[in-house]
Length: 222
Image 1 (cartoon, rainbow, N blue to C red):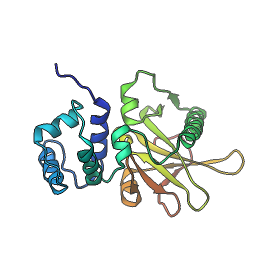
Image 2 (tube, helix red, strand yellow):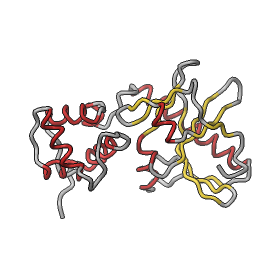
Image 3 (tube, rainbow, N blue to C red):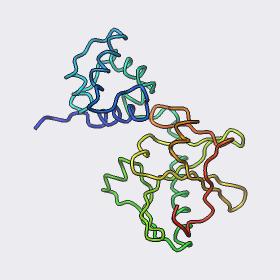
């Protein structure tokens, strides 16, 4: 059995490929495409080396890492360490607190409308991989939700929707209003990819002028 020394890097590399229209699909010339692109940045590596990167067996050296980040249009620091440049440590902690409240809020709305919400277990690998914050049964239909909270100020509000949520999760955007009021939107991927700006691990999607569907109730299936 081969030693997987850098599994997190391999997953980040896969995630960086997701949603990038220039990267071929798996088993459709992806590894060869990377060797050609890296050569244009004066980095010569074999297909086998790139396979090892994706498998997490090895990591690129510094110059290759820089070239990879440029080819994939992602932040080099995120690709190298997994830390997102979009937030400082303080901002990340605050955002996590607000996001946790939004998940509880959506769960409460679903329950009040007759649905059955449940939270992922700590060892739920699917929820970790697909950024699932909440499971629910609504009118007999099973749902997996990623709950996203709005960032920024009025007029400049936006969502940061992680690429990983694309597989297997419905994305809900929560916007706090004055008083004890919120608006909840279904952030569909067609619109996210059409109007969003691709960041290292997420799409930045402005709320103003968006055409996302506002959810008024969880009493019926989405």
